Image 1 (spheres, rainbow, N blue to C red):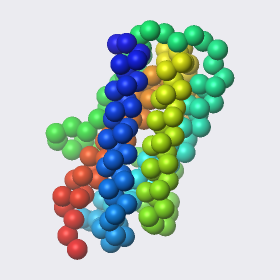
Image 2 (cartoon, rainbow, N blue to C red; image 1 turned 90 degrees about the horizontal axis):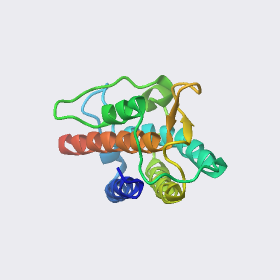
Image 3 (cartoon, rainbow, N blue to C red; image 1 turned 45 degrees about the vertical axis):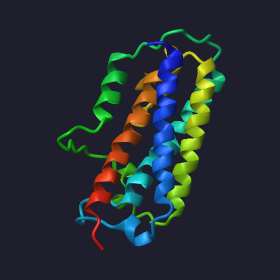
Length: 184
């Protein structure tokens, strides 16, 4: 796929997420913290989970882009592992639950649930848009990003963007499901 098309598609997805998250800002705290049961996540817990991943990946991506001297490629070529990770993040018709790491689980961390979580998330989406625009001049195939799983496991920059954005899309779909269930 052409790098320009790939990045533009990710920018469009991120803008949709940004619009969806800005609408959440108008909701009250009871709405944002409602849960169908003790095991499920509220809207704010979903966003806090994404913020924890953003806290890791956004600085890693920024550093890697700014350090790189590789000329950009015309085409983006997904790696088999990165492509697998990215595709596994997309929500499916039938709920495909995944276990999250303890350090990325807001219920495990007992983080205070305030509307500040939305502000941080929106800020991270703006930062992601900036990084996607910077990536237009970077080599998405040669730049490698350390994963949050292990610093030894590195994904291509293009795969990392794809994984991060698909992960966000997954949890925004989860938020939509929570919103359809809300009763208070």
